[in-house]
Amino acid sequence: MAEAVREEVATFLAESAKDPRIVGFVTVTGVEITPDLRHAKVFVSVMGSEAEKKATFEGLDSTASHLRARVGRSLRLRVAPEFQFREDDSIARAARIESLLAGIRDAPSSGAGRAADAPASSEAGDGRPTE
Image (tube, rainbow, N blue to C red; front, side):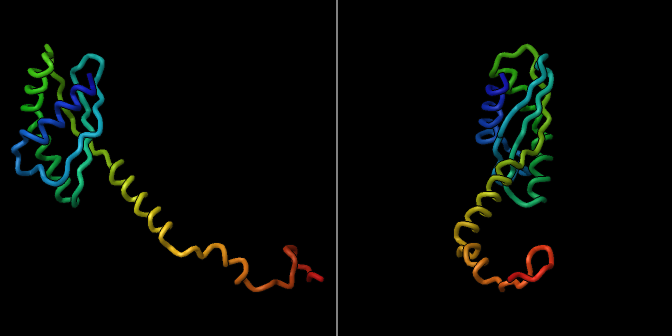
């Protein structure tokens, strides 16, 4: 049921959402529904600035009642769930990790030459001179 709701919400946002506050790239990443089907948490990832994210969530909250009716009709539910939209930043986190890893891969390998570049110590680890 959660997957069917996720698909319906994603389709609505891609095709029918007319609220001008919904800006940026919005992806529905998951849905959690209570066992009685009365409440649903919809996790969305919004790419954009903080102001765009805030405006998008305001727009999503305002379309929740319309979306509830649409989901109830299309899935033929006796009781359609009330939607709460939550931010899912896993896509942004994954993109950041990927860029950091790409930076590490592209950087010249300086770790291998460090031991050879370090000055030789004349003392052992316990403070005594070495022979």
